Length: 423
Image (cartoon, rainbow, N blue to C red; front, side, top):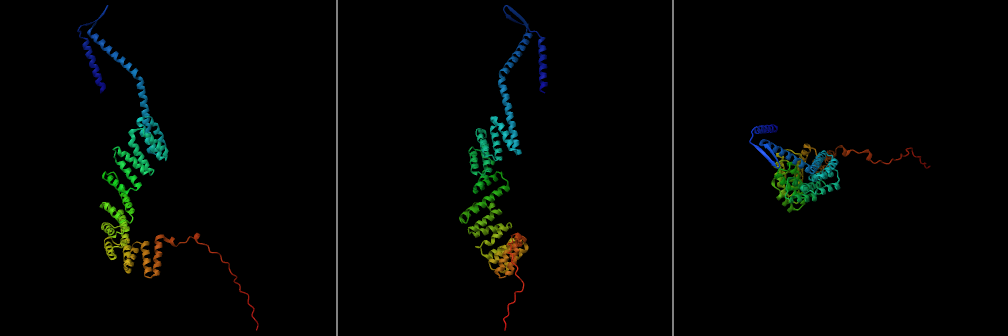
């Protein structure tokens, strides 16, 4: 389209000049004593136009000649930049292909361009990290400090590599330096979460998980794992200090207390601290919503609650959740603790029939011993061993049976007759 427009302009100009040349408006006299030159106006205009074009062409040639060294220099720089950019591109490709030695080598070729030197150094540092070359990695990171434009990227790279080397303190220092510069982004928060997990800073872990959840920056399963791990560690770390356990539980939001693993850890912590009534409330609240065999197993250990009350509550759960083996075992333990031997044996037998397990069988054996039934006790101990270990519990390896010393055979011939004294 541009060519058509220019063609129209040239044709129009030619037509205009041809029409102008047909009209004579006078003469132009050029006096240069003793010379006099007479020209028509049209010819004078044409000469001026030609002179202008020649001068323009001459100045263009002179300008090109004067700028030739600069243009050559720019050409070389452009070629060098293109070569460095191609090296950086190939280095990235090799890094993602897992060819870390090639990636580091190609990144070194991109250092010739100041604009790409920082990025190339960081790629080379990550490649050296993958090859377990910490000295080269540190040198590459140090070389990136000379490029202010990649300062945040350098610090984030340092944080990631420090976490890979289990150096969470260095990672937190690098992240703090980035945040001081006013940069607060999601990835820094994720790295900070990992660092606090490695250090065991569980309150900070919970705070970071909640921040990431508010920004929809963490998957629900990952958030659940980190939250459960932190809460369990905090409760386990409280030991038997009742005040610490209460304070931790008061700080945990209600939705988090209802997580299965957290509820179980809370009950165990309360048991260690001797706080049986709060533990019982957690167990009852959890079992009102779902069946949890681990919580059921802890129900008989709440000895501060009257035994008959615990039995009645467990029987209500039995009606709601059906004959679960763990619930029947718990009822057997509770009845045995209240000396209800008949009911204890009944519940344990039902549990064993429901799902043979060594716990119920061992409790049955112990109960039979208490009731002075050694034969039944031996039977249940044997069943418990078979359930736990299979036939291997009663199989002897001939290689491990000690060899008895051989006994020499005695002479079985009749002994010599003794002399009989005479009359």
